[in-house]
Length: 284
Length: 326
Image (cartoon, rainbow over all chains, first blue to last red; front, side, top):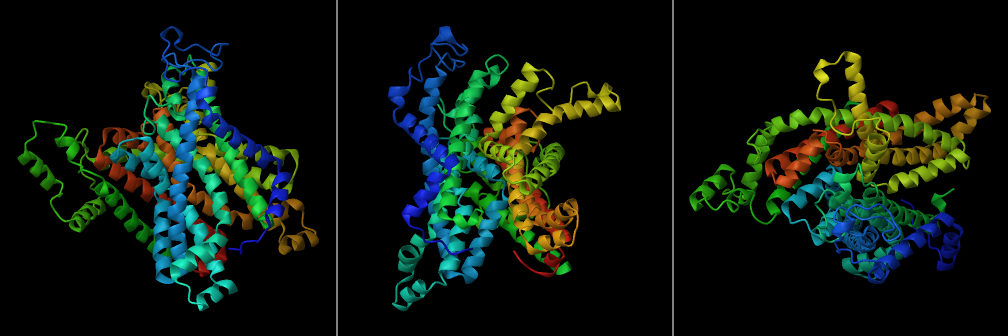
């Protein structure tokens, strides 16, 4: 693991601005935020309003993306669904980053047998098919938005733990760390005030990419009926509604899926752009 | 080589123990007891019957004793009986396992055969139109939700074009078909599931293959090989690819858990009676013995996949056989 590069914010900004895909990603991320924030204003209909006379109508002027199996407006449901995706994405990633930092920092700071045990635990967690693990836990608790945030967070911290550990192993050898230790700083102070701040830059990247992953998992869970419960609209659960009428109403499946794809793409582009700008040596 | 294999087997065993502890822990840290569903749902069950049931599952014992008993049964491949139909869990899983393994193996082969050439070509022709198209494909591939892709493929090939069947892995009248008809029947049923399950991996592995090849091609020994006048084909495919292949194999091994987890999605959508669908059905029915059984066996499959990747890794790279690295 290379030592993190100290880059000034100015350099970072210049490099990031030159990366057009990353800018596009940032714009997508921003737009989804705006849409989620202003959902009540932007949404043309009440997302729960059932219009029995308009069940399964294709895209028209009144309903630009059509209506679902209960006659609800799909655009409105998608706009409200963006809130779920962002909420789950951010809270789940927050949890996974927190766990990952704690385990990675302890392993990398103390080394020795503590490191061996924790990293073996990481290996074991990685060898269980994640989706099985998530579903097994969901089977035990009620499927709800809060539970899936926790479950996604608790099953996706391993990458962050490895990253942070690598950073700590490298930073442990730095002179300023030795100096701080010589001055008698306590372990907790060493970990959180001296080493961690310098170990964070790859964690930010991993957090942005993690939001993309969490949005994908949430939509899959909601699609399977094990995530956000109806009538709350989520991009995944809108698609579930269209599953049985897939041969006559393609729009229920197509549009929410595109929303997921574009949002996830945005976070991935942004994350990659951040990575290149923070650590230009990795890119040739 | 032997010590390498021994070390890998040791780690395989440690992981196996860890997985059983985690699976067992999940089931027992959860609120309530596995028997609650059978009892509280049913008002006619008396306190005495409830107690008997607890004894039957050993729930009256301390936790570590329960774990030891459970492991003893797992080693003997006894996962108990399903809450749903009283069938033996192992039997249920074994019936469903072959089709899941077949689909996952086929998608691994597909990933390897398509992603590798894409990666190699992009790496040897950086910034070409093909390379740029491949990069776009990679980003879109990463962002595509598997379940949505499965449904869109179903709409396109099953509903609009009507080229392919959209559920199951064989027709109902398969027994009356000739061999070639059967072969086509299976192929047409498996085409979409295999493609969908391979799609995410395709993006990841081709990107990784490109990065590895770019790295290798910059090495001095490649320059040497070119300098002594070897043809570009020999340099790329014999000298560079062999070295790039090693980390690619490892990543392929690491992608197995994702593939097996993904089985839940496409088996549910395409109505394929495999392990993934079984798992989904057990989750919906809160059938704990089956959930635990599938999790443990699914993980064992993953661990075997990793072990095989490690072995082929050692086979491709003689220095690994001599070193004990992680």
